[in-house]
Image 1 (cartoon, rainbow, N blue to C red):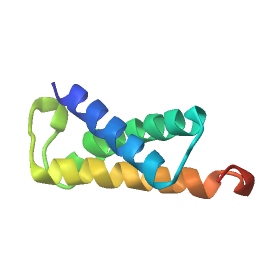
Image 2 (image 1 turned 135 degrees about the vertical axis):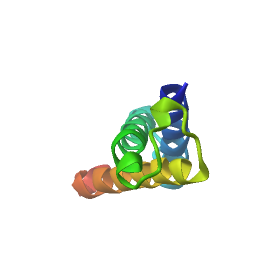
Image 3 (image 1 turned 180 degrees about the horizontal axis):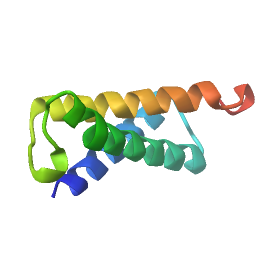
Image 4 (image 1 turned 60 degrees about the vertical axis):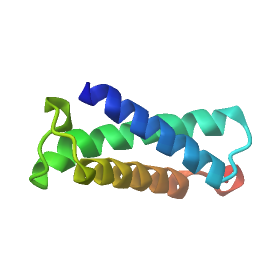
Length: 89
């Protein structure tokens, strides 16, 4: 159940970021959703246990876990935009 939670959080946050960044083409939106999922999974699986928040995969749901997954998604999307070519922004 925790994996589904991370997938949904990452997809929603990636989609919202695509809207905020005005990624009009479908490729930009899909890329943002994929990067959002990757960021949420990394933060939820790796960072949250390191911060003593418990593993989301084991069913330890909390506001801290959601915030950690959100911050992981935002960080990954920020890195994507920094690494993207200026013409693609």
